Image: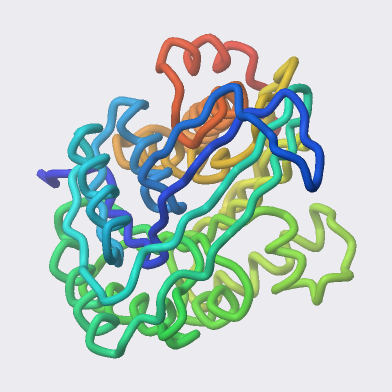
Length: 315
């Protein structure tokens, strides 16, 4: 019996800082009505969502400096299991600025410190060490400076040799190279999908998505998941295509909803539920995330309420 529902490997860790402002004036002093800071980056966001859905995630990532210390303390406080790799320098900070009535938050990202070759090797070993503790291993997020673009592709091949089911959520060249290695699942948003697989210009429609899935399936892909904001999400397998959508009256922030969707989907699939049931929970959880400022910060009863309003369509 696996110890966890998901192993999350996300090398580009961060402190996520959120600032809720009544208004903003460039060149002036702007006072936040509310501010808070969390262990952030896509991996920790997904792990937090998993925990709030009633599951357990193990996290590994790369951290450094005083920011790394803060991240480990926050993960401990939240009860999220972790085995992090320490590096030189300082972990980056991601600043999210929210204005009332605007679902699209303003985000300022730092690059973070350069990661040396030894740290890359240790991180890779850490993933392989923990991959048997959960039914899925999720490789998520961007790669820090110092990581080769083919890191995810190489790691997928290693994990597949061990029998692991690998889920990928990335973008750009790392996504392109990793897709060729045949992960078990790819979860991307529509913009990321179009940029990598449709040359940034092809029409977004069912036939185009399905054709690309078939090509990736030949390399080993079993699930393709494309989140499309208000349009819902599209899930493709060899035997099924599903569109799922959960209506929300007023969005507070869209940050982290894709990470939440992935956690909900894998939690249900790992517990033996159908793709339809998994898609429904994933969509409801992502919608619950839209109602809060922060990533993966919601209550399970809210998810259950939204699940009753979720629409699932077989294409």
